[in-house]
Length: 207
Image 1: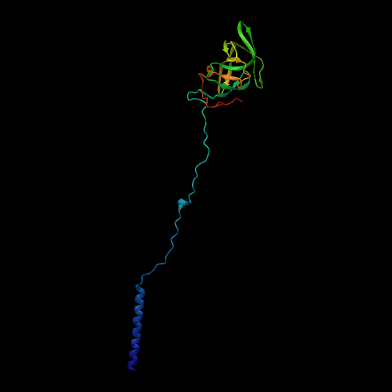
Image 2: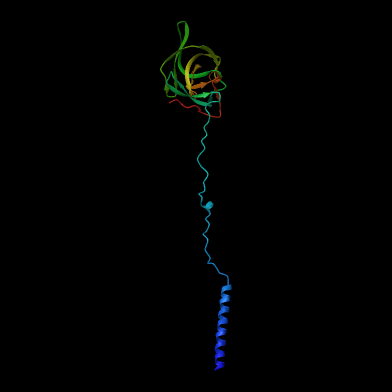
């Protein structure tokens, strides 16, 4: 009987020791915190819209005047003649002294003791009424295709080119066989304009 009680006591003691050992092992293990997934960082720079370079055409405005207010004329320009209410294509000739305009049926006459001339402007499909103007002076022109010289009248007329309106001298000459009915020489543009022969029709045509 006594041995039986001792055996029971030993079993109880060993069971208690095992329980304590298990409890100690469990308490010594470090506490593991549950892993929390961190939110994914967004690449804000990558999401920004990329600005494309502007492809708008660059408009280059060419000057029609110099810094001191003079007109810039090309090799060819439109010239408006108020007396005829017509615009003509004109050649700008830096080698010519005086301007000239295409005139036909030129007849000289005298009025109040002064020389006058009547004529018509004719070129391609343009034919003006008869015009009478006083003669400013007479000039003699030597032509390479003919012998001797030809006497021509020089008159003064108003013209408009761009925003400039000026009186200038014109030699009356038959230019019906030439491309341009009007030629502007140095006597017109020497003080009011500069010529850029690399350009054409710089000034606006009067409508």
